[in-house]
Length: 80
Image 1: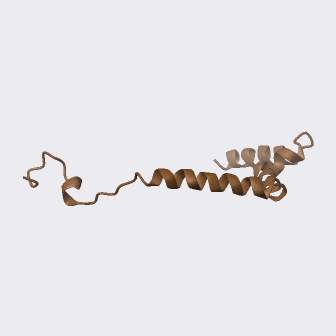
Image 2: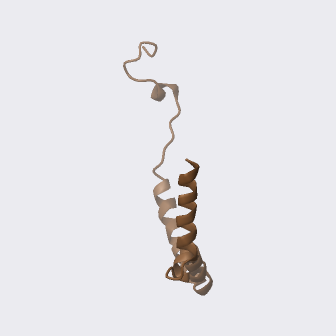
């Protein structure tokens, strides 16, 4: 079992430190998302605002019914 851990660590470290893996692959998607937010803040804020309006509009239709009658099944003998 320990041997498999060494193999896994060796493969991962070889992939991270080899020359053919580009810098862009190692930096991940968060760096590109960070750049997008820094370079274009207003479009990001507009998208967030529109998403908020969309979800707020549809949240009007959410109803919570926590009465005991709605929690018990219709054929429950205790309910009758």
